[in-house]
Length: 227
Image (cartoon, rainbow, N blue to C red; front, side, top):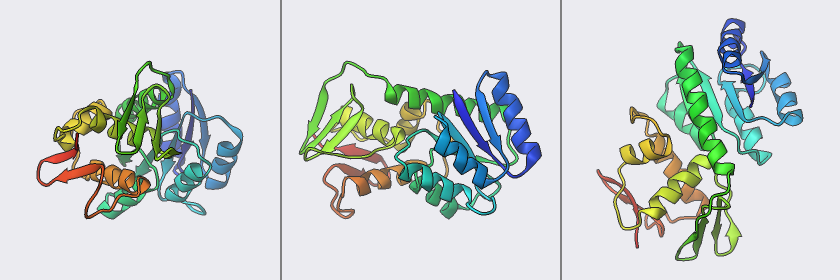
């Protein structure tokens, strides 16, 4: 597994590198955004860990660059900022997770392993039939989603959220259940991560936010897809 680590605080980047190498990951470490972009362009990466506050291109801009190149590997942000709008911006650009500085290196390793598990599962073929919902086709075997025969470009997390809701059509699924089923971690979320991902999925499905056709919001309870 190849991991990009970008942080202009040398001590942090070096520490992350040590812990990841102890888990036998190949680490591509850099302290500047220019080198990070070169690594992205020349290396097959499995995950990127990006410092948000970095000169030249910041972590958000690099994440945007990654997604514009149609690369769907996970992106984890390292940040000293905990502003809610920053979190929304990062997730909206295609980020998968946030780790706030200062952090426990063992927690970072656990988050990396969790993200890689999701990414690996997303790219594995599974013998499952497609789910059809009013012009929407979700194929778990090929991990593709089509709307009226046009493929929709979803990140691994977005696909897993939509698939889980589709498999449980007619049921109201809480944010807590969605998080624990998709992230495979205990729900300790207080930054509306699920809400932001649902918003992104709706945008890609070209949903009317006031009257969504596919993912309905049940206020105070959760989300559901009608049967």
